[in-house]
Length: 307
Image (cartoon, rainbow, N blue to C red):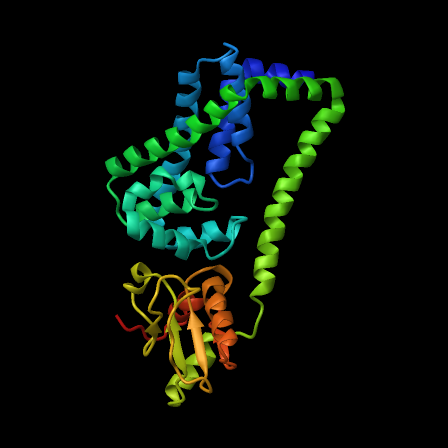
């Protein structure tokens, strides 16, 4: 443990840069403990707070700019892929779009304080064609606010951090083991939350081929598009209606209770569609199914799209 302590003292700036960069690229390795620890060391005069802040902001900005460029090049696909590898709930694409549509690039100011938002917001900025200068300005300000708070908390509670480090140092290898266990517990908790979320959405699905057959035979069900208004601009499945509220927990729908309903989205595991389907079931609708693969699977099969 003492070796780790000396490494942080000697290479703290490099550790901060790598930790922040890796976290903002999407890995479940929290950077705030590192920022708080080095913030405490800066209060003791071992680091310059200004340099520490600059290093953290540069790392965050570099990672976010990578996602911004990916969004510009690959469009909406990159956001779905981000949700597939993220440990955050799969409805993050819709939530991010709703926030970004309301606040625009200004939402980047607080993006890093919202779990699962930062990387997807950066990619969405590129997808929506946000000006590079505007993106860099707001993202840099948000990164400075986020990192600055961590450094400030470290300096504010520097004595408590020092006491904790001393305790861990006295524990030796057991101190290292405690840190490893805490990190493993953090990742496991995130994984369990996602697994529980996905488990709650298990239900019967309908395939795109089955839905297309129903449309061709004139037995069209009520089709609900639960994507954000931004996504809906790319076209909809013929005959689809949209929910009247962007918040999927409070939408209005007055279709026949006995009729068949198909719900689709454009998110991994049909998360948003399954959430809406659950809401409809609670309201008495019994023949509700999400569309497997959503709009992406419908397009890939070559079926018609209403623009």
